[in-house]
Image (cartoon, rainbow over all chains, first blue to last red; front, side, top):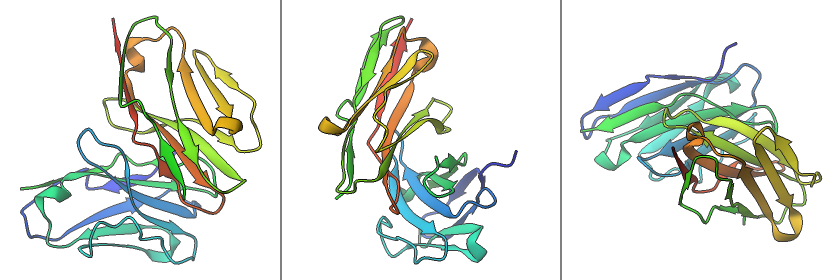
Amino acid sequence: GAGVSQSPSNKVTEKGKDVELRCDPISGHTALYWYRQSLGQGLEFLIYFQGNSAPDKSGLPSDRFSAERTGGSVSTLTIQRTQQEDSAVYLCASSRNNSPLHFGNGTRLTVT
Amino acid sequence: AQKVTQAQTEISVVEKEDVTLDCVYETRDTTYYLFWYKQPPSGELVFLIRRNSFDEQNEISGRYSWNFQKSTSSFNFTITASQVVDSAVYFCALIPRGGKLIFGQGTELSVKP
């Protein structure tokens, strides 16, 4: 069956460029999360969308980071003027209510 | 404030040993859910278990068991007779009702042959 799909799976970009990461959640899942995982580190919460409510952006590390979710489905995480410390795996997850999160395989971002 | 603490950063055991991964949580909500996820070296996050705050029954699934104790705000995970394939990072997580999922920092388990 269709799971959470993230694209691209890998992205290499030059410092200072903007990047867009895409997440296609499981159909019907109202909750969508973005997390970041640096090498050997835990899961850092970035942003959380729940239905039509205002997103919880409390985890975004700077104003260079933004995310939107169109039509309650696809989400895009945008990082402007990328820095080397932005290099990480960006994970998207979706769920229905309080059911377990289903994670995508992540986008590995490398900023050179 | 909501918080999940996994005090053990790394654990190393020899195959066939039993191992317990600790998880302590904080929340003011009376309704919440607790989870364990496994992240093997391949990187994908695998759901293991969900418990709600009203169900303190311990659960066993094969070699895995979970001990949920509200009195100590703990949700510990035990692997019996560990195997090399159990080597992974294990994350405990909490979601209060209507809130967002919060992860602990993870415990890296290494099972040596």
